[in-house]
Amino acid sequence: MKVDWKIHLYGHIGGDDFVALIPGNTCERICQNIIANFDRNVLKYFTDDDIERGYIEVANRKGIIEQFPLTSLSIGVVVADIERFNNILQIGEIGAQVKHAAKSVMGSSYAVDRRK
Image (cartoon, rainbow, N blue to C red):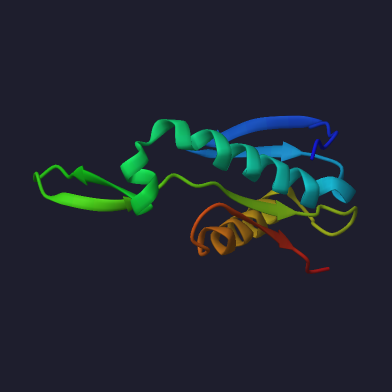
């Protein structure tokens, strides 16, 4: 399914965190499309054995082999309606909460803050 969408503004918050401003009525479809594309393309970076196991095995700094899940994507969505927030910090706080909710699910996922 091709989704026609436009990101109005995007930026890098820090580390592996990014922000995008998009039309609110398309956020679910956009999240689903981003995750589908990510999950399909990230597999190029793993061996067939890794994909079959569902994790990679890597030696840590002490030389001990550890298992890590395959790379996934977590998206937190905050609907920033007019007059819902007093400042940008409040949006960031809610964003961190919904991102944490998305990360609590195994594999790629997204969570939408539906509070009013």
